[in-house]
Amino acid sequence: MRGVKVDQIGGAYQVTNDLQRPSPDANQLLVKPIFGAVNPVDELMRNSGLLVTSWPWTPCCDVAGIVVEVGSGVTKFKAGDQVFGCQGVGFPGSGGAAEYCLFREDIVFKKPDHIPLAEAATMGVGNQTAALGLWGGLNIDIPDPQNLPDISEEWVLVLGGGGSVGGYAVQLSKLSGYKVIASVSTRSAGAAIAQGADETVDYKTPVSTQIAKIKAVTQGKLRRIIDATSFNAEFAKKVLEEVKDDAGEKYFTSVNDWEDFGPLPGDAKFYPISVGPLGRPEATELNDLLSKFIAVIQVLIDTEKIKPGEYSLVGETGFESFIEAVKVQSNGSAKKVVAKLQE
Ligand SMILES: NC(=O)c1ccc[n+]([C@@H]2O[C@H](COP(=O)([O-])OP(=O)(O)OC[C@H]3O[C@@H](n4cnc5c(N)ncnc54)[C@H](OP(=O)(O)O)[C@@H]3O)[C@@H](O)[C@H]2O)c1
Image 1 (cartoon, rainbow, N blue to C red):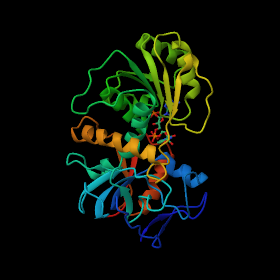
Image 2 (image 1 turned 45 degrees about the horizontal axis):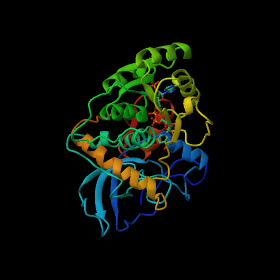
Image 3 (image 1 turned 90 degrees about the vertical axis):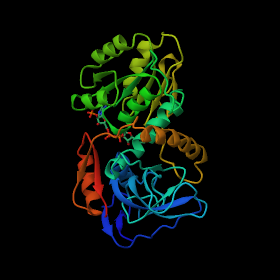
Image 4 (image 1 turned 90 degrees about the horizontal axis):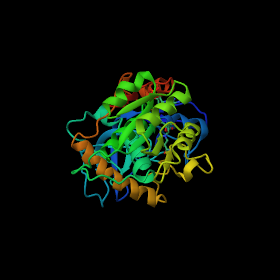
């Protein structure tokens, strides 16, 4: 089948006709991806080989498309349904930049009518990662999506609230009953506020200025920090140092799951966010956790409580456009970058 491949670590993206068409297991869906969104992990995998189980490898883990076939045990989906999400990365059948890819029926979202398919392609990785950080790592209760909690006086600090993961961390924190202060640059401050942030702090101002603002805004009620950028642990430590004498257990979670940050001020508990093994048969705990979170997020999306962020569509229809989209994303786009892969 047609799609994008990379033959080896550091190799070029190539559009090819020689990819093997995957076949769904009992609990899987065969999906025709229509739109694919780029994530930083695409280039990370190409450049490092991290998470790639075999070559050639096909990129694109944020997909929206149409179910064309279902496995014998699938009960919740049928051919023709529109679905989206992140099905995992690096293993055969996971790459969305191809004529077909696979999803597990418990790790996929059903597209609601009010969200266009292109926007749906931007929502999977960000939501799934943010949920893992907040509900898995910050000791935040999963909300009842039909009966959302009132907003308490407790704060979540979202470092990198201007990105995709950070933006959904802002939304999910609010929906879980927390106030939010998000670190952003000026280009994303409006978007963070639109996603529900109560306050923003400009990460380009001096650290002392940022910390003073965070302390003034949260007034002793900051116990939870999520780093949605992967490089803000030192900053998080400085904030934890400042709030360590305030009452309550402190929590820090980061998308940086490869570094050991050592003991944290105030004995804060650390949780590394690690979505990478998602969808692999051996990742049973992660798969179960995410499938539970996805069920909640699905209701929040269906009821328009979670809103997609802004995106830009790149190129003409075709797999070549995904390669172009990766370049646009790598240049530091403030918006999610999407390609239309096929009709
Ligand atoms: N471990 C995992 O399982 C996992 C899963 C998903 C993603 N990730 C990682 O999470 C990171 C974010 O992914 P993403 O998809 O959200 O990326 P993204 O949409 O490209 O967002 C990155 C954002 O980081 C912000 N930023 C840059 N420097 C900053 C700083 N010093 N302080 C605060 N914010 C800063 C920028 O915001 P402004 O627009 O405000 O300047 C930018 O928009 C990536 O490193 C990705 O690889 C890890």
